[in-house]
Length: 137
Image (tube, rainbow, N blue to C red; front, side):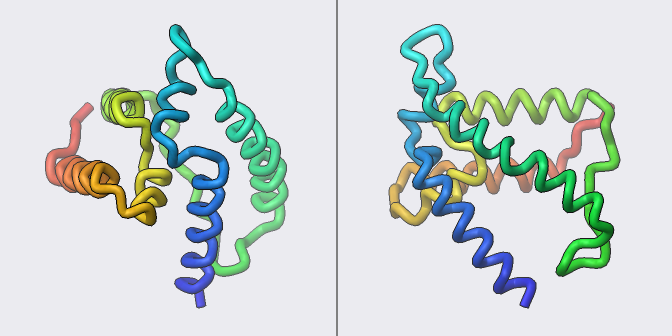
C-alpha cells in the first residue's frame, strides 16, 4: 500500500513540476540568471510551494505520528560543514549549467529527451561516487 501511495504522490509531484515549468531548462536557467534576462516566474512557483508546505509541516509535526509510518524522519544534523558546502556547490553548479535539479530531471525523462537521460545518468554516477568517496570534515 505504501508503494502505491508513493507512486501516486510521485506522479502528482512530477506533474506539478511539468505544469509549473520546472522541467523547462531554458525557463529555469532564465530564473537563475539574475544579472541577465531574469525570468521571475519560478519565484511564484516556489513561493506558492512555501505557502502550502510551511503550515502543512507545522500541523503535521504537531499531530504526533504520520499516517503510514511509525514516526516522522526529520534531519538531525544542522551543522554547516565541509561536506554540506561542497555538496551545495556541486548541486548549484549542476543546476546552473543545465537547468535541472534531481526532481525535475527525473520528471523530464517522460519527455524521452536524450539530454535528460544523459543528465540523470551523470547524476546517478555522482550519487554513487559520493557514497563511495565520502568527504571528510
